[in-house]
Length: 161
Image (tube, rainbow, N blue to C red; front, top):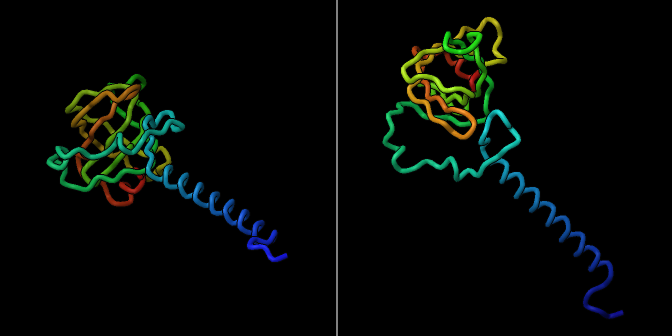
């Protein structure tokens, strides 16, 4: 046979296209997951578009003196006399050397103080005192902007993500 496409060539072409499609699909899925952030840290299965978290031009003029680091939510324990039973749990949704943004099921008064500690922290790690600078409702939970009373050591900061 003197044809342009032999059966072996057609089979290898089809297999190559299938493999290329699978690789592109996996890269698209990986890239999509990489740039999605959790909308509700209390329900980690819900994801939102990264455009929901885009920085607006006005936020460049905020008062933050240190760089904000986002990452996976880290579960924390919060202690304050304001909470029922004296403790509550929440999630750190972004952090900096100056403070934390914490997602919490209940609101908290601006200017109030509380103690915070990563849930997986060893018993030798001390509690960290934070001052609530802002409290905003975000769907089913509140986002607290907290500043450290005193900047904790680096090994303690790393426990918050």
